[in-house]
Amino acid sequence: MNRRQAIQRVAMIIGGSVIGANLFLEGCTRPSSKDIAILFEQTNVDLLNELAEAVLPRTSTPGAKDANVGAFIPIMIRDCYTSVDQKSFLEGLSKVDEISQKAFNKKFAVLTQEERLQFVNTLDKEAKDYQKEKREKEKAREQDSRANQNENSTNKQNQSANKVNDLDELPNHFFTMLKQLTLIGFFTSEVGMTQALRYVKIPGKFDGDYPYQKGDRAFA
Image (tube, rainbow, N blue to C red):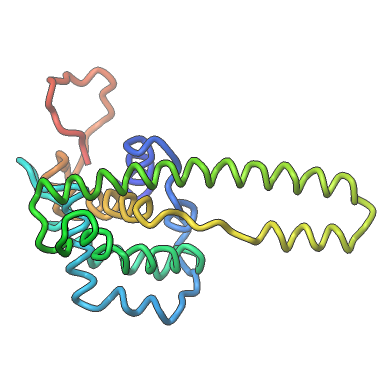
């Protein structure tokens, strides 16, 4: 399975578009802030692995931690995300223990498996609500921008101002980015492709009528 297929699969799983998908496919060359370096510290890589494992835990097949997704995520945040989303991700990660303390009176690292599931489910709901509101705001902003451009089509100064406003990007939710990168990192890893999926090193011809049995894993 190539990068494009992995992104399509993640989009199907989450029921929406993948943040930074175009950059993932074209090659990531986004400039990053100096603050991003903190993500590569081992303590944060470990925390990201634990968070990713809560999203995609080990069952009869490997989990996100087995694929070391925690080391994959900082690279993608650094190279492929806008400065606005980088800041949002850093802020979200820094609040993980604070949220955990309020909900369970202990840090995320020492939560039980059941508590971790509750933790990520809560963040997932919060993220979905946030992303829905973000899309509505962006749609309203786009409509206002088009209306302004039509009204001021002969005024270059107003057109220039509208273009600047279009650059005011609304950040994505921390957990939305974490969840997407967890799935992409896992399904593009050797562990994910060879143990969670059925890996065929040299595939044969396309067979549109290949027999399927319930529970069969997808091919990589």
